[in-house]
View 1 (cartoon, one colour):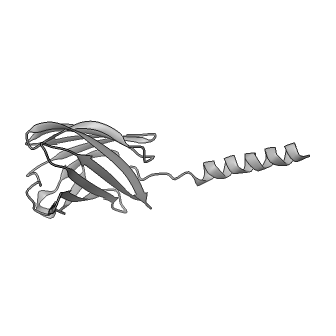
View 2: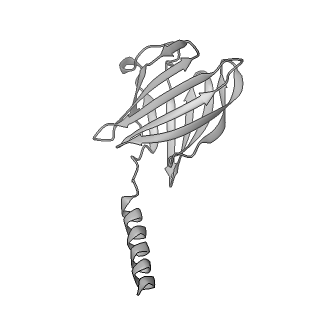
Length: 157
């Protein structure tokens, strides 16, 4: 009898776990920066295209701007992911970790361009109609805030 009860308990936990799994906001698509509606900062490009490929528990972000092309991969389940980033004219290793607040995704990235540390938090929020993506970027280096602009993107596809 105890084995039956234990088996039933484990089955109910498994079913609850599946039901309790979060479905994440789907950011997939091609996004064009709306420069006029974005905040101005030293790191706001004049133009940018972000292509977001979202499958399973990951996002592949392909960014293209006048300064070049970059790719980042984010694990949506909170697992840290390492990738190479080009910052301040040099390639540097970066590690990003994703957390969620409801439908809002926060990407926490730490990198070490040159001989300094850079911490960047990007907060992604999709409009209710899915046509606008707002990314608030808060960037800090030891002892100095580098800015907190919001980038506004409109869906191309």
